Image 1 (cartoon, each protein chain N blue to C red):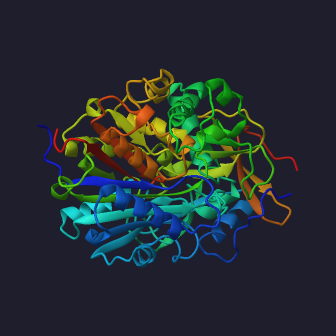
Image 2: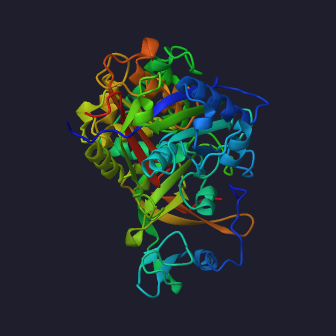
Image 3: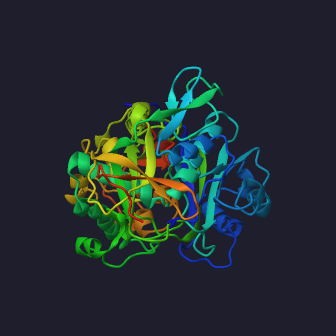
Length: 384
Length: 138
C-alpha cells in the first residue's frame, strides 16, 4: 500500500442543465444543483453540518451564491460555512476536506451556480498584469496571457499550432459523447486551423465558452460513506501551491513555474505516480493550461505536451484520457467544477459512452490565475 | 492620435515621475532606497524589505522580447486591430508589458527599443520596436 487510508469521500453529485438559463439567479441555480446532490447522496439535508459556497465574480456580494444566500434558501444551519472567490472545484473541495479532517464538520455541501452568459458579463478585463499598465497596452482577456504562454512554448519546444489545436479537438470528441455538453458538433483539426486567430497564436476554440449552470457535491467521512448507496469517490490526497503569490514581478509567471512543485506534492501526499492515474481532469479556461498541466503532472516530458496530445493520448481510446466531459472548451463554462463531477461519475462507473475502462484513480487539477494551484487525487479505493 | 481611451491619472506620486521621464525620452523604474532593489510596476513599498523609501532610477531604453501576442479582436480599450502586445525584459530582471510599434514580424529574443510616442491628448505612450532607429511616424 502506497498511501494512508482515505478519511473523506464525495458521496453525492448534482448538476443543472448548462447553457443559457435566462432569468434565473445564481442562488436558484446553485440550489437546484444542491438538491440534486443531496438526493443523489441519499442523505437527509438535516445531516449537512458544513457548507462551502463559491461566489461568482463581479457585483455586490449578496445574490452571488454566497453561504448566507444558500443556507436560508435550503433551510439549513450548518456549523461550518464559508464562501470562496473562485472555489472552482478544487479549492472548494479542499475547504470541505479540511473541515471534515479537523472535525469542524462531518458532512459538507459544496455549491456553485453561475449565470455569466445570461448575465452578459464582459470578459475584456485584465487577467495578468497591473490593471492600468496592462489595459493601456490592450493586454486584456484570458486569451492574452494564454497566447503569451503558447508563443513562448512554441519558441522553447517547437510546439506547433496543430499540436495546440489537437487539445480542443480531443476534448470535443469526448464532449460528443456527453449529453450535458454545449458543443457536440464534429470538430476536426482542419476546422481548428481554418478558424481565424483570436489572439495569435490562439483561436476561438482554444478559449472557454461562456455559459450558465450549477453544480454541487456532498462530501463526508469515509465512515459515513460506507453506509450510503453510491460508491464513494475517496480523496487520497490534496495539495496546493502558491508559488505565484509573489505577484507579477516574476518574469515567466504565465508559464506557472511552480506547477512542478505542486505536482511533486500531490503525488508524494498520495503515495502515487503519474502512471497510477487513469484519467486526468485539468482545468481548461484555455487549451494552453491543459498543455502546461500535462507536462507539470508528469504525463509527458517538459515541452512534450503538444506532441503528447497530437498523438491522441488524451482523446477517446488514448493512453491518458483528459477531460472526458469535454471540459470548459466543449462542455460548459464551469471553472473545472464539472471536471470534478465527471471524475466522480467515472469512478462510479456511471460515465456511459465516455466510461474509461477500469478507471479507479484520477487526478483533478486546478490553477487560480497565475497565483496558485490545487490538486486532488480521487479513487474508488480508499487506499492504494 | 491615441490608440486607447485609457489615460493614467495625473498627480499620482507612484507614476508621475515615470511620465515626466518619458517627456525626455527616458525610461525610469522604482529603486528601493533601503535595499537598492529595482521594481516594476510601481508599488508603494518594497516587496523584499517593505521599505516605503524609494526613488526613480534610469534604465536603458532597450530590452529583449520575452513573448508577444497579436490581438485580432478588440476587447477594449484598444479598438484597432490587429495590435501586438509584448512582454519585454528590461534591466534588473524586470519586465514591462507594452504595445509593439510597427508591423513585425516578431521573434522571441529580439532586441527591442523603447519608442516614446506623442499622443494627441498631450501624453506620451511608451511602445517597443525591434528597429533600432525606429521612430514612430504620426
